[in-house]
Amino acid sequence: MEERKIDINSIIGFVLIFLILIWMLYQNSPTPEEVEAQEKAKQEQIDQEPEKVNQTDTITTTPQDYNAAVEVSDSLKLIGLQNQLGAFAYSASRASSSDGFTEIENEQLQLKVSNKGGFITEVKLKEFIDHDSVPIFLVRDQNVDFNINFATTDNRILNTKDLIFEPHLSNSGDNQILSMRLKVSEDRYLEYRYELRPDDYLIGFAIRSQGLSNVVNSSRDINLDWQMQGFRHAKSISYENRYTRLTYRYDGRIDKLSQMSDDDEIENNVEWISFRQHFFSSILVPDQAFSSVEMKSFDLVQDEDVDSLFTKRFEAKVPLVLNGGEFNSNMNIYYGPTDHRVLKQYEKNLEESIPFGWGIFGWINKSIFIPLFSFLSSVFPYGIAIIIMTIVVRIVLSPVLYKSYLSQAKMRILKPEITELNEKHKDNPMKRQQETMALYSKAGASPLSGCLPAVLQLPVFYALFMFFPTAFDLRQKSFLWAEDLSSYDTIAELPFRIPFYGDHVSLFPILAAIAIFFYMKMTTGQQVTAQPAQEGMPDMQKMMKVMIYFSPLLMLVFFNNYASGLSLYYFVSNLITIGIMIVIKQYILDEDKIHATIQEKKKRPKKENRFQRKMKEMMEQAEQQKQQQKRKK
Image 1 (cartoon, rainbow, N blue to C red):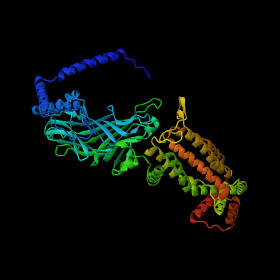
Image 2: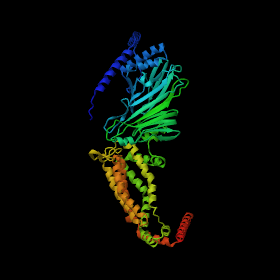
Image 3: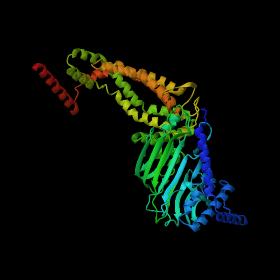
């Protein structure tokens, strides 16, 4: 740990701050009249038993909090009677006099709401812990700033985060209601109203006011500012930061701010704003879409080698519209897991904040892989569920693999004839190309047919690539030596950090890299040997040979910090694919029969379609033009 030293400038700064604090305390000391009013209020409080609220054991308010609230409330009432416009300013000057909080909780959440600012200053998710077995806090230690900025009719600029609110707890059935009021007088106030339901991550939140139409200047902009720094919760901060993003829904569409760099955006008709911290989210959901929202995202991980407390900082500025000169905004705040099943139950499209992929990739995940994996993981351990799902996927795709291997076999059989054509027309590339295409057409083969199966498998490959890093069910689930299938597995810690690789060695990526090497040796290697030597082909063949070694190396390096569940899938998938290819080669495909079939097709007259005739005509015209140019020369 770096040793921090205090220099002379720091000492001078501390002395100046101390002197300024002494001066502020002197300036803010109450007058004799205020002291007398406060003493009178306290005496009345002692004489009368405070109103008791019907609370369950999940509602907690400390005596210090209650007394502080009473003191602030009485002071505000006194000043409000003297000067309605100056009441808010007085509350701001008294902000340091009370830093108490009110605590409420249910089965899922434990919340602390501060008297200063009236907003939630601590959110603990009771069922979850991080990679160091520390409870998950989404809000704590002032990582969140929630503020309404407005002007009074005498042009005072005020911020609610600096003002003192008075708490009041009550119950509505099984729901817990917490009212935080910033009072001018008993019937003139600004209120934050929280409603916490049993066994729920969604908190009802409303901003209301009464009797402030002559106090708040409605001609000036009134903004709700919500800022948050996302805590690190995972073992790999770089991996977690990759999936930590500000996501929002507007006009029925989903958009995100930049993934790994600073970004900002202004959007209209915003239905919700999600501060997603990979596996946990804080989402602001209004009952009616925000007319306009200004959003910003800042990447706080500048050096992955240095441990950081935060991943990103998110900011959202929402203009509030007054109704008859009063505040009246109803919304909800979600604090909880980024779990598809949990988010979907609220029927507000919150599950769309999870990056399952766009278009067909997202559809495959939502319609196939999520239901399939949910069923398998409810029956088998999570690691076994991944293996079974991999087997199912490879069996379903085995016909595509068969077509690919059949194409390669045809190309190997035709290679001697293609080589003969190349020698026969080595001085006439156009004629050589025409004869080659004619042979392919008669034999029912194509050099591109081997690429088609790979293209068909691409949506599945990418969908699974997006599925495993966002599968909440895999979080902190172990399998074999992997302690957490949603993070990387570790078999050795390195005393140094290798760029792009990390400071540890993961075994599943090594196994996946070995499997993909042998798979590509069987597929790409056979394609190289099956392709006849043609002009320009040596470079292509060299590139394909390089890919045999480059792809496993890329897997080894890139996936060392990825979810071990994803590496486990690729390892098992390539093993199964290799097994299927061996079975196809040894027991299904007979190259002698394929050769006989090709020879039979070559004897039949081949009917050309319109496209083939057009291509043939174009090639003949090009050949004629080339011959004419030669004769002119």
